[in-house]
Length: 157
Ligand SMILES: [Zn+2]
Image 1 (cartoon, protein in one colour):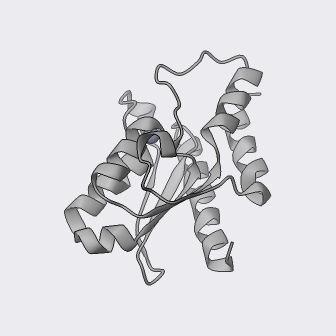
Image 2 (cartoon, protein in one colour):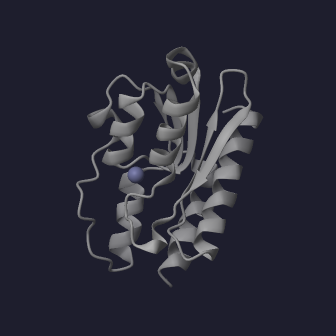
């Protein structure tokens, strides 16, 4: 993992923290172009009642609107938590490139179970199960603890 990539992941954590402080779920993501420039950022915004307002979905739509197919394929999405199936599908449908996530869906589920939360209404299949052609990297062990702390704060555990 390069320093610049860790920086993008740290930005994802900042966005997740902002989401938490705004009453949303602590998830944040950044879309980085082939040259390493941050093109767009998003954070979870489900607090208003729309549970599809995930940052990775938002970035997929942004990419479809603002980037060519070639630019999308060469881009990377950095994110605090592994894409859920909805976001993996959106990522795959718009032809975005690599994904780097800090914590896996499996880790998140384990934390939720540990906190006694009900299972999610969607099966948390891995990114590769949904979008097999996407290059995926994660978990990023050095940052997992920070993300876990945000999720435990969200649920008061
Ligand atoms: Zn999602």
